[in-house]
Amino acid sequence: MLQKKGSEMASVVEMTSATMTTELTPVQHDIIKAAAAAPSPDNNQPWKFVCQEDSIQVFFDKTRKLESDVDYMFDMTGIGGAVENAIIAASHHDLVAEPVWLGNVEKPDLKLPVVELKLTSGGSPDPLNSVVEERCTCRKPYSKQPLETAILDSLEAAAVGRFPQAQIDWITDPRAKQRFGNVVAAMDSVRFRIPECHRELYKQLRFSRNEVEQTRDGLDVRTLELPPGVATMLKGLRSWEAMQAVHRLRLTPLLTIPSKVAVQKSAAIAVVSISTASIESYMHGGRAIERLWLAATALDLSMHPLGSPAIFLPQAKERPQFRSLIERSQQETFELLPRLGNRTMQLAFRVGRSKPPTARSLRREVSEVLGCPK
Ligand SMILES: Cc1cc2nc3c(=O)[nH]c(=O)nc-3n(C[C@H](O)[C@H](O)[C@H](O)COP(=O)(O)O)c2cc1C
Image 1 (cartoon, helix red, strand yellow):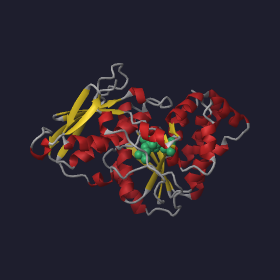
Image 2 (cartoon, rainbow, N blue to C red; image 1 turned 180 degrees about the vertical axis):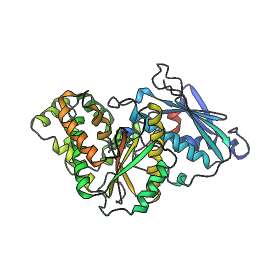
Image 3 (cartoon, rainbow, N blue to C red; image 1 turned 180 degrees about the horizontal axis):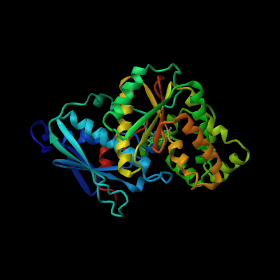
Image 4 (cartoon, protein in one colour; image 1 turned 90 degrees about the horizontal axis):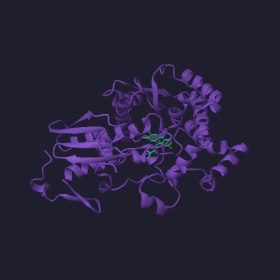
């Protein structure tokens, strides 16, 4: 299928390491580049790919996993996005990429793929291909102008249409958005008070251009669109002792207010949930999320994930010191989202029209994401 022939003879040579050379055909290169353009939590890019003649194996690179993740939900969301992008890109080369879930996530042997994409010829080009590279997170303020129902319906159809286990609930009423903003701020404040999350945040933050370009992963502080002074303050809070002092002085709202305000400065909040809490479902939910995001991009809409509610709302028992805050936030969330019921919230987003982001997150080169995880 992907054998090099004709014009493809000029294969792209990718050096995966000093000792390993993998030759990719231009088609394979194109598919992997699209897969690696997927969003991931804190831009951790938790994936690796091995291309074979008629298949592409997708690995979960556990060495890049985030400590704060629960049951691999966010990492699998990223993997799902990469899988969906690969399927979309393959369709532009007259290939159907059929994903087979292999589920090797918790196995100690990292050299087993989580998903295999079986490639056969046929199918038709997916129009979302044109926005795979364009899609990005935009954390700027959005217009509060409501989005037409037809737009919300088309976004929902793009995501849920193919993944019936996924559901999107919208929050559009200004007062309800304000209440959800309080939930986000409360869950962000939990995140800022947990030492492991603090460590993880500073592992992922990139304060200088040099760091951004050298690592090509993590959170470029310029993409966070922070109000003046907050980036400098964040830099000064690298040590846990300094962060604890902020909490003791009751200055935590300085860190949580930006996302609370951002929630209000959006046209709508989309909450994506999934019917079954399993690692495989999270991967499919990640595929649905990627289609939602690409469909929004195609309509010139911006999106900004709000990760804290999905991670911390289910942790009332595990985090006794925050139990009452989490339980109050849970109550508020169920009132705002009555359809959520027993479903698992996978990720919430701000959605709306905005100016383009100040900066875009980089990705590691294709050569760096080839091969089995070490
Ligand atoms: C599962 C998941 C959770 C995320 N959570 C947050 C979040 O809580 N806050 C935020 O600002 N961005 C969040 N993001 C956005 C990522 O930081 C972003 O996708 C990544 O930095 C790559 O940038 P890009 O989307 O512009 O390509 C999340 C993304 C994913 C896939």
